[in-house]
Length: 306
Image 1 (cartoon, one colour):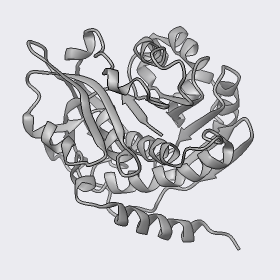
Image 2 (image 1 turned 90 degrees about the horizontal axis):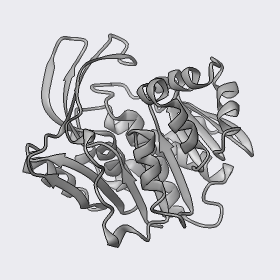
Image 3 (image 1 turned 90 degrees about the vertical axis):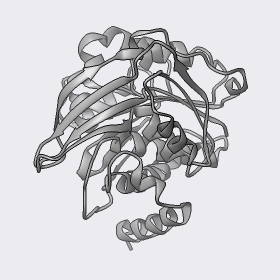
Image 4 (image 1 turned 180 degrees about the vertical axis):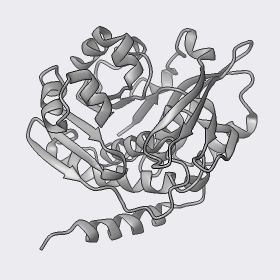
């Protein structure tokens, strides 16, 4: 099935716990998601950047055979979204150093006509009304899933609540689930979110894995035990990309069923485990689908019972 994603494309600055500073890195929620999903299916990318966006970054995206960049708009006279973050020693928490919205303060990019038959829609992290506007362009979508963050919960909770009534699934982290619902227990928080409309909620817990709260069941999955974590930026987005890429590739009438989502979660976990091993898309550019499949087999054996 065809998969479309909209979200941010940015230029990142990352500071590691050791004090190393890495500037002008390709980043953004849609970038990480689409690169990860491209290992499973064709990922159609819809996003906007400014005229300061390097051609080398576009070339980097085009290195992924399954990533379709026809929906990438380069706006003359505009500036690309920029973000900087500094990670704590545990690499599980970070401080935002700066955020320059740039083109994100402008109208969202149009959806190419060739993309309008997309059956699976992922709304990567952006303002809930931008996400809703995108979703409304695909009234016949078979599966729609959104991501969000603490910023929108704090400043646009009513709009986010409206979006939740329209999507099939939601992906967010543990802290965000607690912030939205007031429940620290992720299962309780997930059940609260289900009452607002989604069929399932995936709550990410970083190195501790994830929890799936579905109308038809509950599942907890550990993270792949990555030995060398270099840069966690984009881990959640690549996780979502693997999840949605697998669901899109598998297709079928049970697209958002408990069993299909549970199985796809493991694929998201594996893609994310590669991403954190280097900066930006560097690690994912250096692997092939066979590498992903081999690590998935290893992971499946790790968690097999009986």
